[in-house]
Image (cartoon, rainbow, N blue to C red; front, side):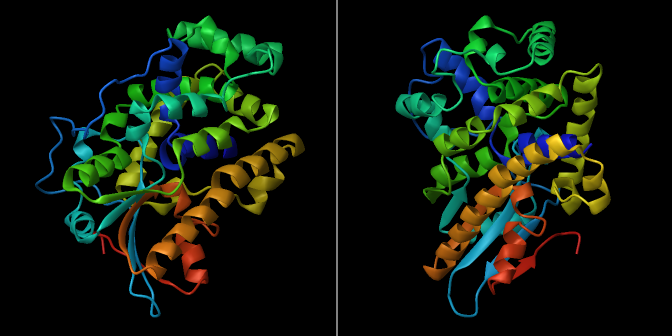
Length: 338
């Protein structure tokens, strides 16, 4: 259960993993997914006015010493048409901000062939091996069968690391759960910023996220892939994704939490603990520090920034909100439910 909680959060609340499945497939065919760069457009059926039905976690960060201000919105990387319009207090904060900060500019990545090739190197085997050389026969065979049954398998994917295969599963699960990356909170504000002429700040980059996830050990990547293989696992995760969205939409901080109680941790096999510690370090601890540093930099420079990153980066003891408070900043939650 601990693994499911952490790995599902990665798909929707941590990193923009959906970029792998689509763009890597285009790289395999030798084509960029899009050929003409320009300001992207919002989905035609997206409604931006009226009463909102969601109330996601949202904070404002200020300092007694510096004049800067940062708004923090905990994002979900796949949502619904009904997610919009967003609450008025969130859109007012966006309007006030001079800049919008995101994990990475996936829209620019779509048009940049050089970025695509550079990122792809982190999730492909360049030493002549194939994925089956890095997985047990049982996991490799089970993954091929499951992807084939879903109409997702291609032999060309065998040169890719398991993290690409897990992304294929996640993309399928998101679609089946009624969510869509077309209504991603990140994508929405990237598009708004570019349309409105606001400065768009990248805290990380697509290449950096590929490097992080492609750098997972073989053991961790096999553990993540294995999670999709038991009978009924896909159906269970489709349900879990829907539940995760509902909890995010209501501002439930536990939806994005990756904290584990002592009792839960004691029940985890020792070999799994090593992988889970690696995962938390790479996906949360290291990246949270980077994001917290970015907020501090904006405030010290007197900027007003609207920052959108995965909700899992915001919460828990190692999250951005707590880390900023420990550094002496005032972090106040804003929500319609209060």
